[in-house]
Length: 419
Image (cartoon, rainbow, N blue to C red):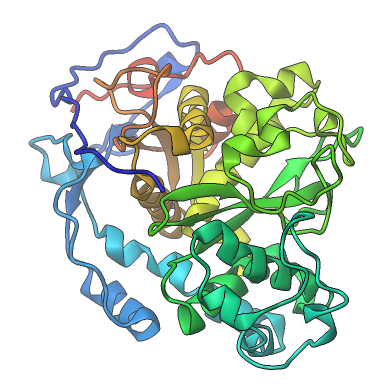
């Protein structure tokens, strides 16, 4: 467990004074209407969202206090039209209702899988079919040992192995359902750890180099975090070995996972043929001849799914979002190094993901970037970010495909912020 020091807030330039730059597309932008430029930056302000909080409280009981201090609140303008109220605690509703949504969409109750953590269901999966994480890990399910584990990793040795062991029975086998089951099981029976696991896909070396939301063309993986332990760990969702010794390496610390720590090493599934999204800032996708677009899609998916693993209807949302390539590198670098830095807060990533979900719900077109005045793209994520709303639906696609990084510093190179 890491020991936290007081976080020092970086000064943020409030008056950005952005001008048109020499982007090839800058001159083509026209105002969407008389009162709104074709591109403008949201001025995020803390606002209590009573309706969303009421819905959330039905799921989790107590909802946290309104976050009135946050790095993303540093930017401000004098125009009220730019104000966008945000309640970070209420945005957690997207994640907290995941279990309910998966339960409803599956057509079969997921409750029996959750209850398996507390009763005699799936007895074979808990004994002879128990898929243990390492050679020295527990070989059978033990509820009391799970509840009394001394640390988060040992707790997962039981809970994660049980989840994988009953995998064949999970309705629909959608990987988002698995993370929702795990969170619900901890919430009901082991609230010591507020476990947040989420899923995404990792390219598996197929010739078409595609990564799909369902994971059909990629290896199902994820990350898992607990604020009590303050550890970010890899989280596999299939019983596939990655380590050289044949162990499953199901939930090691992210920096100790063979796939991210030594991507050229040989293992059961050949990590050298896989591109994990957290290697995006190393340009591993380029070294491994993986297409830039799918590699960046996996990054967006990784970050977005912190806020909500998608149930089917989530793919039908009208809102289009894009991350600048520079911002994607900052986010992946910071997450890969998370356990090494005391001045990085996981909550910043969850809040960013919540705003990404909010944008998808609202509809429209949005670009997310680092905040002007930050330390640039070579450092770590400091919690501050900029949300640009744009008039045209093709813009997020341009940003997404920007391998040359011409649209980094988005507010300066695209359109105009003149009012």
